[in-house]
Length: 169
Image 1 (spheres, one colour):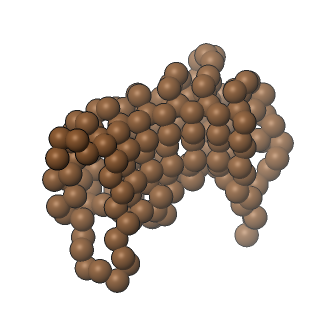
Image 2 (cartoon, one colour):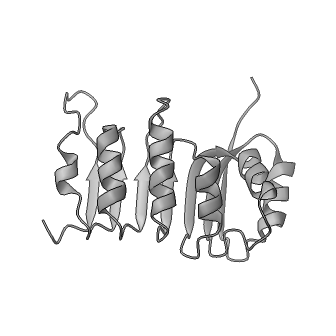
C-alpha cells in the first residue's frame, strides 16, 4: 500500500486481535498514525525504523507497562519532523528536551505533569523552548508551575492551553 498516508488502529476491546500484523501497514509514506490501544513492542520498533516522514503521532492509550514509555520516547527522539504528538504515556526527559527544540512541533498533548516539563527544561542549556508550539495539553496540580513554564518557554504562538488538574491524594 504505497499510497497509505493515515493509519488509525482502534480495535474493539472485546476482540482478541493483538495487533501483530499492524506492521504490515507501516510504510515510509505514512504521515499520521493513531493507536488507541497499546501495540506490540516490536511494532513500535518498526514504526520508528520505517515511518521517517511521520508528522502526527497519537498514542492515545494510558498504559502502565514500563516497556512502552521508552519505546514511545524513542520514536519521538528519532522523528524530529513530528508536528503533532498525543501520548497517554509520560515521555522521558530526553524526549521532552528533543521536542522542546523542534521547529516543527505545533501540538503537544502528553501525560507528563507541568512540573516534569519545567524541571527538565530548567536543567538544560538555554535555547528557545517550543518555538512553534500552538497547542499544549498537560497535567498539573499547581498553577504557579504552569506560569513558570510559560515564562520559561515564552510561547508566542500558543493559542490553546489545556490543563488537566491533578488533585493530590
